[in-house]
Image 1: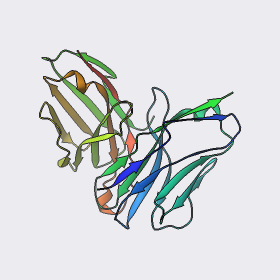
Image 2 (image 1 turned 180 degrees about the horizontal axis):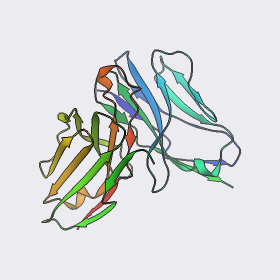
Image 3 (image 1 turned 90 degrees about the horizontal axis):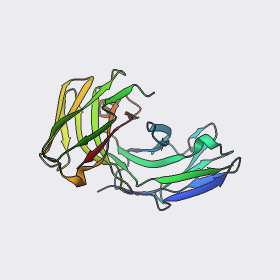
Image 4 (image 1 turned 90 degrees about the vertical axis):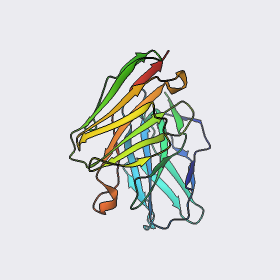
Length: 114
Length: 117
C-alpha cells in the first residue's frame, strides 16, 4: 500500500528566508502524481504545486519549487522569500493515476517569524 | 474560495442525534469525496463518488451514511455518533482522474467542525 511520510511536525522560518519541507512516499506504481497542499488557519485547503512522476523536471510555481527525487521517493517543497501569509499547515499528497486514491501525510505546520 | 461550499461550518451534536452535512461544488466536477481530518493524523478518505456512484468506501462505520443525489451535491448523514468522531470533515471534488483528462487536482471545501458530546 502507498504511504506518505512528513517527518517534520513543525517548522519555523524568518520572513524573507527560505525553508524546505520534507516528504517521502512509498509506492510500487510508476504512474502517479504528487502534490503539496496548503491549509491556512480556519481556511480552505488549496493546491500549492503538483508534480507528475513521469516528468524529470522539478515543478515550480513562483516562490514555490519542489525537489523530486523519484528513485529516493522524496518530494520536498522549497519556499523562497517566505511571507507571513505562507504560515499554514502543508500537506504532501500522493495520487495513483486511474484511481480515486489520494494519500496524505500528517502535515507540517509552518510558522513565519516577522 | 475554491468553488466548494460546506454547511454547516460548525456542528455540536449529542450521541443520539441525527444530523447531515452538506457539500456543494460549482466547478462542474464529476467526482466528490468525504475526508475526516483529526489532529496529528493524515486525512482519512471516507467515501468517493464518481458520476453519482459510490466507488470507494474505506471501512467507515455505518453510523456515517453518504448520499450523492447529483454530481454537484454530496451529503453525509450522521446518527448515533461517538465522541471519537469529533473532527473536521472535509469535502472535495475533482474531475474524474480515471478519464485521463484531468490534472487530478482536488478542490476542498472549508470543512465542518463536528463535536460529539
